[in-house]
Image (cartoon, one colour):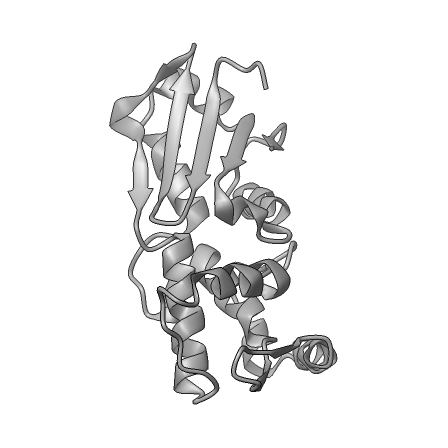
Length: 196
């Protein structure tokens, strides 16, 4: 991007790292990392969901490519989102949205089993933006970013949030950049922000 100051969010198969840099130098003390927020973590949740539902028994080594197909096709996040997550309880609009999604989220697995993948949007969203919904004490992606910024020098904090470069396999999840920007804005971040 030609920027000398900003944040790199690299979310790949094994981990997610937040790396702030200022005047072309990495701010080592401010790097944040999570092994929970990763492609492998998301694979595990997909495997657990389909296994718990007795839908399909995954073999992680054999089905690695299948995970990638499923993630690309069905894993997405709500671009607007909500930090309160109360829409899951008794929100009729959300329930209607889910009902509508079900008809377009049918997928045939290698053994011929037909599965409804609508739940994977919720799993993806919770994995990155509300890990506690999945039983994890890890920080969410926006919390990791804010922590990395807060560990940086006071004079560079505002500039760091102006440019966020999101890279790695998980950056391809549908709407994740828009959702990240919205979540950071709700946390009071810099309004003049670009998420690439």
